Amino acid sequence: MGFFTSKPFLIATAAVAVIGILIGIPVLSSDIGIGTLRVTDGCERPHASGVAVAADQAMSEVDDTTIVEWRYNASSLSRAVLDACLVVGDTRIKTTAGDEVIVTFTMTGPQRIRDNTAVAAAFHQQGDTLDIDGWQVARARFAWMFDDSDGTLRLDIAVPGRLLVDVLDSRVDVGSIEIGDLVVTELDARVDVGEVRLVDAAVAGNVTARVDVGDVRASFSHLGPGRHDYAADVGSVSVVLPESAGTAYHVDAAADVGSVGVDLGDGASVQSDRTPPGETTNARSAGWDSATTQVDIQAHADVGDITIRVR
Image 1: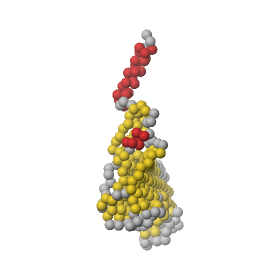
Image 2: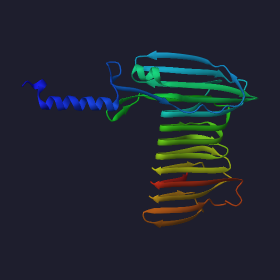
Image 3: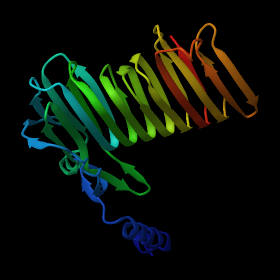
Image 4: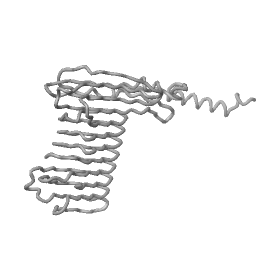
């Protein structure tokens, strides 16, 4: 009896057939490798206010990278509302010196993944306010055996530095959000798995930065009165606050499993309770009661450390 009719070969062939039925017929291509192409829904379209306005759109491809870009001249506007959402990827929001708002999606990976990854941007105008939306419409990935493989997706939004961003709302399921030196009234950034980074933003009002699994890193150039909510279910929270005359901070921080470190400068009142495996701290800056700008900060980590200090 030859090998191809032997019992081991027949068993192996049957096993491969069963696996094929379970995972679907694989696509074999030198362009995308081995696996089943799966396309699923992305983010819901953000709610927009105002009248839709047309932006200049361009697309380019170089090697394994596709870039889709929208540009809108906002020279006659003074305010903006921004909403960004990705399922898997990284979002970067920063200022630009020009008058154009630029929304750019950069996709890298096999051609079929890029062809089936859908992204969109929309612009609406209401008075002197521009509503800017960028979101992932569909996610494409490559499934083989017990492994899923995406390409990479990055969303970059550049906003003229002279625009006041009334509301900034950004969501990522898996990936990261980085928000740079914008001037924002309200800021809300949430990631399920990954990281939120706020880098020298100026925020006039409330801030929310939350991660289910990962870290929150925040620093600010200026803060107005408001409430801040920082949270990491599994991960760390690190916040650096600006020192400014007339500004005082109240911090209520708790780590269920981890440590808490709060430094609000000379004369601050600090009450800490270290009960292993966790720690809680309640602190107020000196002069809190008479401060013209009061910032109330709540920070929580289920498992992880919290560090909050005035630079």
